[in-house]
Length: 440
Image 1: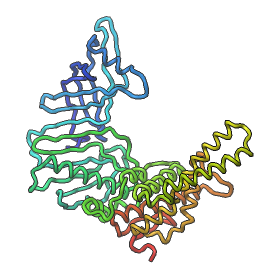
Image 2: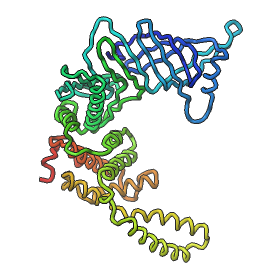
Image 3: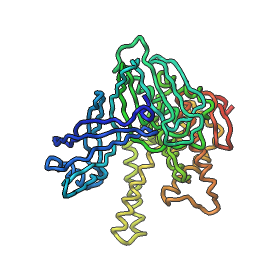
Image 4: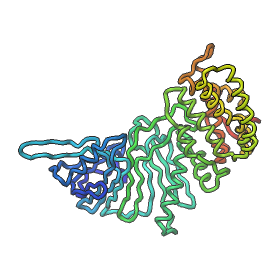
């Protein structure tokens, strides 16, 4: 049941509450083409029992109070949301009607249970997608059921619910609750890997479980989907990476730690090249630190470092006593330099990349070490200055650094997943490349 096409305006009678305070309300729900819910609370007379609404709405601070709104329709359908916020109370006062309000409601996630009097559903978990472009409908059978994933052939409306990812529970299973948890984990993994493939994080405004004559829906308020201009996989041929997404859930070549974090940052949209360099380098550093042990990262033990730190700190104090007269300034400099000494016990980014690539078999022979060093220097320039501008260096070089770092990240993740077929590379010119031929 697609909210954007199957949810006409529905009326509910229920309650609005905050903590122990509660009042009766009537409200309506309708969904737009993006499955964004519009919650309209009927205007009601404002009395003493409603004071908690105004008090919590005007509590101040940097966050909104979260109210709970729940109700039931005449067809025994349910709505429940415990994170309602009010951006306005819609207060009106008139001599004839007195004081009344119609709060303007917004939500993060809402739950609905809708009914179908004419249709009986087998257990099917469906995630409705925004931002997924695919020429073909992708299908695959696995031990948790039949998986289907589809999108639009040409993504033109970035705020339209245009795709789906679903899984049918096998007939031999009857444990719906257990299956649903397992199926949701699988769909989440597929969504992450396909987001990596498409270069944009695929949005899931609604998640629906159809069973019997009921459809349970979790509706999420989300923004626009952003189409990538440099996806590693084209919408015309997603079957290989889709198969890898499914197989890597059950039998991953390597269990990549913090994978979802890495993919979310990797697919982050930005029109500012420097920001893209920072986010890409953040992904690389997180992948390395998350998937290497403390022993891999450390050059020396804590006790060895502490001995060295004390000796170096003594030297720092001695020289600063000659260079800086003001005692307060000298103390501040000593403190700052001591904080930087901690980097002495950690391996460099290059060393960590070499350890991980050798351990996982990531093929990096065609990427010179110097390119990564220059990319890191560029990132450091941006972090410390807020922009990238050095004498004799063109802005185009920043984009080259971005391509180098993103290529490294992509190869690390695909290798960890066990993907060995072709993908599209943008480093050194747009071209198709196969992981198993790199370095040969």
